[in-house]
Amino acid sequence: MKKKGRDLLEAFRKTFLTLQNPTPRQIKMDASSERYCYNPILRWNPQVEDYFIKAYGSLHFAQISKALTRPSCYSCIRVNTLKTTSDAVIEKLQEIMRKSGSDNDVEDINFEEIKANKSIDLDMAEKQSCLQNGSVSKCQIPGLEYVVFVKGSGPHTIDYGYAPDKPPKEVLVSRKCAEAVLRGAQVYVPGVMACSAHVEEGDAVAVSVAVEQPAPDGGWGLGITRGTVLQGLQTDPYYFERNGLYIGQGTTMLSRARIFRASLGIAVDMNNQVFKLPSFHDVLEGEIFLQNLPSIVAAHALDPRKGERILDMCAAPGGKTTAIAILMKDEGEVIAADRSHNKVMDIQKLAAEMGLTCITTYKLDALKAVCKRNGSSDMTTLCGNKDNNDVVIQSSDLRPLENGGSSTTTVGLNADTNCKENVSNEKANERTYISKADIRKNMRRMRNGPGRNQSLGGRVENSKGFLPNSFDRVLLDAPCSALGLRPRLFAGEETIETLRNHGKYQRRMFDQAVQLVRPGGVLVYSTCTINPGENEALVRYALDTYKFLSLAPQHPRIGGPGLVGSCQFPDGYIEEWLRPGEEELVQRFDPSSPLDTIGFFIAKFVVGPKET
Image (tube, rainbow, N blue to C red; front, side, top):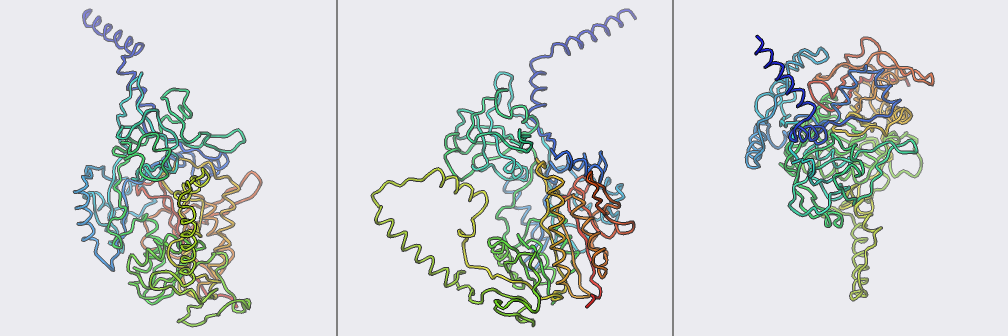
């Protein structure tokens, strides 16, 4: 017994000494696991955080915040059933993934948890369990068999090769770049903010994120100069703030010097990411469209029928527009409107790519969607029959030529070409100088896309609105705070004031939408935010303002119920949400639920007889 006691005492002493004097390996592992990992904390405006805690409860909101920092564990693909089938797409994707060496050893989604969650329809959870069978599988929810899921995996623990006296070479990227990388993208040159010294092409580098921090003026800022040299020391900018913000490891495609001199191209090939999601860029174009599951459900909730006239008020980038057209078997008329010239052209391109002919696009501000019958005299035509679609066109001479342009565009291009040739001949022997301002402008253009003056292709038709009661169904997927999109590494830019302004803007758009739907028609409202002020509060406004509106059941129903009650703000303003009995008639997609979707909200209204 004494010997046994001495052995226990000796073991305890060794353990205590080990804790007091950890080995170099333990120091390395502890430092590496604390710093070189992915464990972000989403920063919110304090007043906004209090508001959401009142809405969801402290624990639930913490779960939502954590879920928002991570991508969904699967990609959702909508199949163009007018061109192919889900089974054919699955075979093609499996072959592509085999050739690319994609890892099929991924984690299953635990749908037992879904069944235990009373906010999720049990039958839907049972049918959704098809995701557990294989990395590429077809959705079994009735009506959604044309949806294909491709599973990913993560978060993975990555060995960055940390040593106490030799930290790994590192590339620091912007938040927007990091959010794209977490969804499966590469690191492109414009997204690189800082880099270690002596980084050469082909080096292995750890990739970390620079997230906005509180600024002295009370706002948020980055406070780092692009091109900063990272030493791997505590004196580095954002050294401590980068703890837990490492998103993967990659191989540099350019040297440090070339990264900060180039204006485009891949800077880091991400070959070892925290979240592994297959990329579908330029894969099976026209046959598939990568789209979030709630967005697909929103198109289904509209329940479009063949031969109907349907309006998608804020249509860009065209995912829901094309989904509606396919559900109609490309028979009928889908009007897609957006206020951005280039976005309207993107919708045109997508529709052509998918072979859809029933889609007509217009440039139109959703706040000016209604055209009164006694409109102003400068309108070209007021159309009141099926052929001219009850739409007012600003100009009737914008028909595109066969090459996709217009006569006006062609003349302009020819004149511009001649001018450039003359200048080129006169200055052939002069030295060409590109200013730093031009370089910055070109980099912004690559990040943000071409502006209106740099648009490629023909023009789009401008609309001055549509006649009241001229549509069978209207989809208003309203611009919103987008606080449901994921992955998201920062949310501090939204304040209580900006959230309220979003709600006011959406009510104005809803006022337009409700006038355009004929009696007996359907209006679907959706957002990609978790903010009740843009969701349940809008439904309350709609039902209280327009007595001829009523909430209608949605099919399929896989989202959870809405929020019931109200919230009082410090200034005394009371925001009303849903009333008991209404919560089951809307769909709220919770990013922290086992369905693992983005945050999303859908409300479906049936339009009754309107007063004269």
